[in-house]
Image (tube, rainbow, N blue to C red; front, side, top):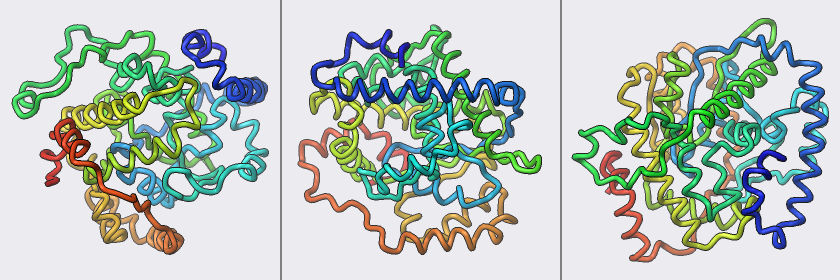
Length: 379
């Protein structure tokens, strides 16, 4: 928190958000005490912890069903995953885990943007923890500083090579992509992100080990969609599952999420244009990066699912994904847990948006996300 304030404090709208700053400072003090305990009690064990070298990454733009897929696959006991509590207290969750149920009592039991169940032990995005541990070396930082969105774009792909081609020639023939001048990243930022990421994964792995069994890590953060190349370099045996959805529905849902949730994070007042550009640029970048990088992944290490198909036939599409990835022999074992989870969704209702996008807005989305429409077969 101190490092983040040193780096970005001048950009905070202090007179608007001083209660939030005070609250975060108090929480950071609690987290610091816990971090000291984690270091003293578990430091050597975490340092020597070996990672399962076959993680599974769930990819996809925000609002494409990645959380739903994360919740589903977490029912497979072969997997370890980050939780709401561990990403909220990434530096201290091992020594503070006894208070996790207490934290759960003061949490909302549903997410503000879509009413999905939320609890201290539900699967959660690892990038939230990495963002905190690295003091903001993450593309999630526009949720705090929306007017500085462009300055955080370099943290999507962490491309440090000054001579690296921005996109391959075959892709450039098909689509006109936006300028990537904000995409260059310094090697120190990459090192800081990787160090924080690996440290959190080791803690997650350590917390999940039982009887010497080293579970596979099930990791989900939409921004990983832009990092397939980097993640494959770090974990050559990694598996990637890509979720996608009709782009117009994604944009509509993303705007709703911004209205319902982002304001809880801001340390800087945005304009509506700031928020819209963040959504549009992220959609362009995540799709372009995924299309460029996924080609280098072997077929048995990747699969995809359409949100609409998963919604129509959950069990059939999960079984297909298991077969695609060579996990077919495990499906019957996990099927009862999946069916139980499916029953728990019986009363769940997706967001019903009051009105369709205006003609002008739809035209902008279709133009900015044209490659997304074309490459994934959306009309």
